[in-house]
Length: 268
View 1 (cartoon, rainbow, N blue to C red):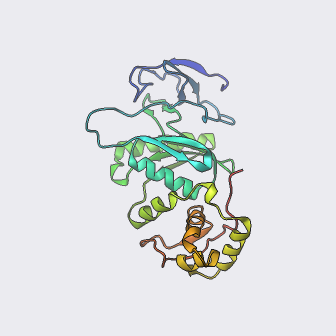
View 2 (view 1 turned 180 degrees about the vertical axis):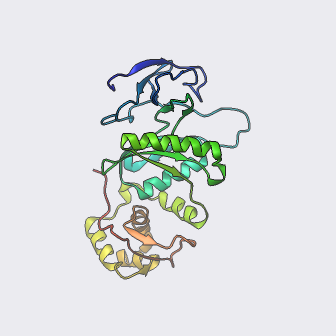
View 3 (view 1 turned 45 degrees about the horizontal axis):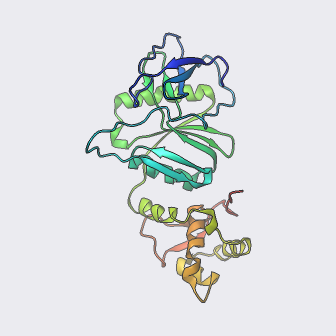
């Protein structure tokens, strides 16, 4: 429990449960759900130390109505060992991208509500604690959906995040071949597809010189190279191996040992 936290009664509107909160503090206020009927709040007149919303329930849920066009669900974020709720395919794509690019300790969706001192509100989409200890607040929004009002809300969110020592990042989903390739590779992200340490070391050494996916599979198993494809795709998703994502991924695609990545980070 954060020092100075106070109780807040939630409204029945599950998509905006803190709409009845009237901020008269003169500061921004951080609000989070405690259970189905009540929440907690803390005045942001100081920097919050070691803030951890990983155990918070979802602060809000999306609207439910017939024939809606957005899809919601839970993404199994394997590297964090948790299921992360999303309310649109835009958010799902961003979650896959984050698991592909970031090393993190936990990720939670709809973690809290920011009640600004002008009495407007904002519910950020994601809160992440990185493996480097850095805390990041993410908002997911398509570029063509960011209007003047949204920019103003994001600016206020960024200002408060800066005061707290957090990053604020606005994410846009990837598209085209980049997404098509990553969606395929994500199917091989489970750690049981990781090659043995001997195989991994051999592959990273072999791919200091670029080779095709097919050549690399034959390097692992000359008899049945297709059996070794999951290990290669796993290392590509975990960024131990790099490839050109501007075109379709195939057996003829060239891969190589990726940048600063030496050995894949393995769970446990």
